[in-house]
Length: 592
Image (cartoon, rainbow, N blue to C red; front, side):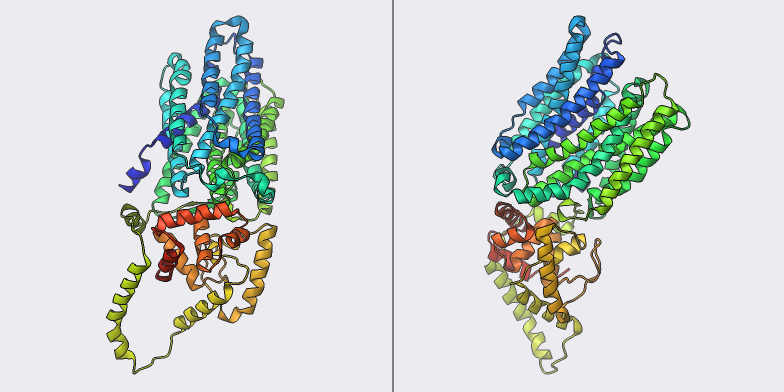
């Protein structure tokens, strides 16, 4: 039943799947391959795809600049311009079949509109998914990716004569309608949409610095895909096979994710993803120059499938940054898009330099493979120098029976109810206490540890803080300059209270010598029960330690509006209405 609920189509999932299907067809020119061969010459084909890629990346750059200088304008981005651009692109290509004297002009205009419209659409979907809860957003994106693979395979079965009209006249308007409906549900009162980058540029500079390695890593995969793309569009006989194969791989990965996610909580970041994809992409590139055209097709399919997966991870990664740090979702995705797709344009140019012979030669494929491997190695060096950061971690919480029951029957926890429950528990335990009062047993080592942890919590309230919960979930993460000051101060405090610290076994990569006190364990227990994200758990723990909103903002290097958004989500998930009720829930939670 839970799996069926996860796979259930919604407006967001179906609409995004339609867009991904359209985007998959636009990768190979939409209906451009259906033009007459007299119009679809070698030069016009190369120019069409080059203009499409350039317009795509430059549109992201324009969005990034406008969202930084005029963030209020990004809230009111209309779906209509993107839909019109995509529809007009297809209509112009159809017109190019019949108006021969204007075919070149129509093809050029269509390429530009296709790039602009695709970028416009994906920015709109980025706002929708960034505004959602992390678990809901990630699952919707992944399920929609699976739907898109199925839809694309279905489209391949439709006669070519119908496909040329189906895409611009049916699928584009339907995808635009779904995006418009989804956009109406977006809560624009969240901090990420109200954020003004010029009010705190240091936070944005920090995010850009932290995101650079991730963007370059995905861009390296885009470079390989761009070079392979040039080869494929100049050899149409294998391009359709490669695209079908890449969508098949995408569907298999989605199914594998759903099977794995049901049994365990998944946490990974872009750097981990790149370290897994790197050898797979390298094998595909090495195979391309050898053993004939069939193996070249397999290598090209592997390369493009890896980049397709990377773009899905990139979208979820940008949503995570927006939620955790309160960054404008248009800005962060446009930043990634500008970097990644400009690097892909460079890969396309390398493919052009390799030549466009009608027969695939070992020299052309070897040139592309060597250049792509070099870029992958350079990106791997950048990835190796990067430090794992809190905002780069993607989370997919495994289904929890307690959490599902709490979600199906939400309740408001009040202090009075907890006091009544405690009074009953005390009465039930009174007899046992009387029976054991004469023996006065020695306190166990565990009880001594809990007592020491409690005293450590009290003394820790006035000191700079490095969240044990964050360390417990993510390991000893690196930090930017403001975080380094916090970590340094916390280290000195830990040294002063070393005799009172308790050690916890490593978990999800956490260091085994990190302090995990009772409050931290209670926060982890509540987070597991109610499905809180790592950032929400971190904010909840800081609240439990008596931090105020401004103090939390300073320590986590985010804005106060973002802190308020996290607190609002914590209250909603736990089912409380104020801080005192949340603290009561924490106080009575059983440490995990």
